Image (cartoon, rainbow, N blue to C red; front, side, top):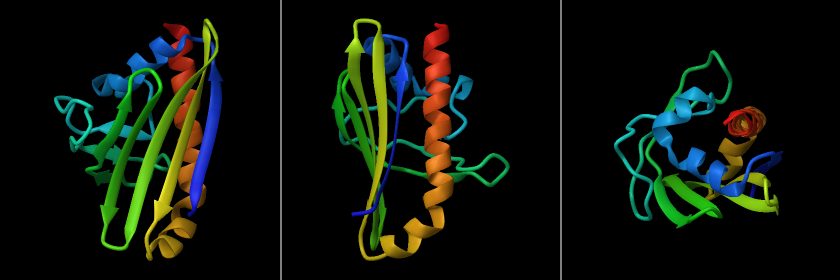
Length: 144
């Protein structure tokens, strides 16, 4: 199964980083990769959320409506979007490095018959966007 992965160490406790990730309405202050299209939608298992993705600055945003599949407080958040023949899962994980430091892990997995066509087309730009978002999260969390 094709996947993309990035991780970054953040000089902030896991609880702070988790709160930042859950506050979709504030993503606009630090996140240039994912945008919240409806801040009134809460992140909860089984809920659909409206998001927009900007892989590369200057390109057109891609809107999608993934379904939240897992919320483990201060540990893991997953959601999935799909079209016939293509499934895309997003996984955010947090781990303690020590009392005041954490690690953010961002992984995307792709499955379905069409993934062999879509993934090569989006791989490089998607990876850049994921890394950019991880860096922006680090900068924002360390300033608070």
